[in-house]
Amino acid sequence: MPNRPDAASTLILLTLILILGLFLAGVTFMNYSGADRWWFGALNLYLPQAIWAIPGIVLTMATAMVNRRLLWAPLLCVLWVLGPLMGFCWSWQTPPEEGQTALKVMSCNVKYGMRHIPSLFAEIDLECPDVVLLQDATGLWDSSVGDYFRKWNVRRYGQFVIASRLPLEEAEVTWLDFPDQVERQSALRCRLRIDNSVVTLYDVHFHSPREALSLLPAAIKRAPLRELMANRLAENATTRYVQAHTLAQLIRRETGPVIVAGDLNSPDGSLPCATLRDAGLHDAFAQGGRGYGYSYGQFLIPHHTLLPRFSFIRIDHILMSSEIRTVRSWIGTPNASDHRPVYAHLVIQSSRSSSK
Image (cartoon, rainbow, N blue to C red; front, side):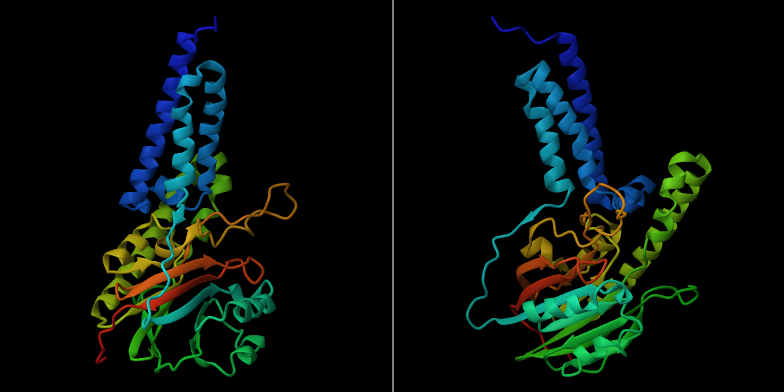
């Protein structure tokens, strides 16, 4: 006869699995509610969510040795992480219907050309987007970027470049934060004409959490720095929320199709993304992507480590109003910048002419 599972070991395993399940439920609740309302939620948004699968894998191996009938429980925790917690998406990618207006959009934070800008041009040549929105492009226009886009319709301001194969109207700069901010954050708005439609474009770049997150290694060792990091995370999250709230108010005033693209520095479970969804926008990758769509993180792992370099967070987004549907959305290569480009093949389902 096979050995009966040890009751004490089974109880310990069940307790550990329950604790893990409750933790994952808590993280899921934070993400659903806007994780950056709490300092741990704000921090967790920028961690590789795959780390929370490790306890589940360990418990799965332990359960296989102690009581195989309970294997479903830790495996469910692992699947929970690999699915909803890591932001797995799978779309049917319905092709455009006859007569619908199609538009292919690309967005990329080019990070001041620190990597390999020719790789960006190679991607554009390969993917052939109709509209390209760049962030962190300050100082690049007088280099190869300006030369590459010389035959495109271009609007630019500061770090922003909007380049289009289609006609663009004059651009305007909108401010997204308080007038007394030391480093004010702007967005570039212009309108695109395609067939009989006029689409409003916003090129945006929200405040970075880099300063707060840089305290993490030291905060792990020193308690006073943990409080400082928590405060910085809260201040940082508030700044991005204000920027998203201001942008949402601008979007609500628009009367036609709207596309917002850029480096939001905000994963999907953040308050800024929730705020923009409340304004009537939906995410291109969530609607038309397959996989995780991670656009950032590959260069945060140093060269000298044995760890693989991979993207683990989706902070670059293309968002659209309800008049626009995503046929397909995908992520580009990591060759050109710290950020992978984001692509979206869109169709304009209806258009209300704007008088603005």
